[in-house]
Length: 89
Image (cartoon, rainbow, N blue to C red):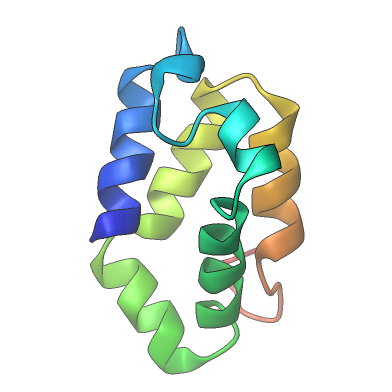
């Protein structure tokens, strides 16, 4: 749920994401990017996909890509997901 809270915060601040805890600068310079690696690991297994769906993380990621116009987020999200699952694609 921690991931969901931070993604929601990022979506609320989409016009100025630099105020969010996961600001573009922090994502690039801190271990915040490890959250995205964790999401990627979860997307590789059926149980992980179930967890991501239950927390609505995958939909939030789609919303971030659509609404927050920073390449850093798009690159992280696209590069972290496992695309062997239909939902991730």
